[in-house]
Image (cartoon, rainbow, N blue to C red; front, side, top):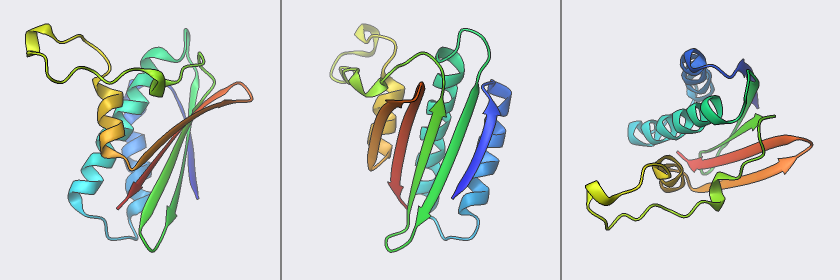
Length: 134
């Protein structure tokens, strides 16, 4: 299991990519699966940075690889404002682009790209868990 703790700043996004690439460096991962994973990680990370804290805070990211089938589980843990993004309704996809509301598309894509997404609030922490078969 790998783990990294970062200040919740946008400039640390590159460190998130490096962390995940290091975690995946010894396994064979299909490029499209890796891209979906990276897009989901970026969306989660950026949303925590932008909305979790009124001031500055930290984000802890844990990952665990499992084989047969090859699967990664990633947890984002923050002590920001309690917020369950899974409670939001999915955006209306059938509307014309000019009639669509802003917001909600990121978590929608995360749910589409990942095999499983779970949220918990424990001990003063938001815990968002992503799971994907690679």
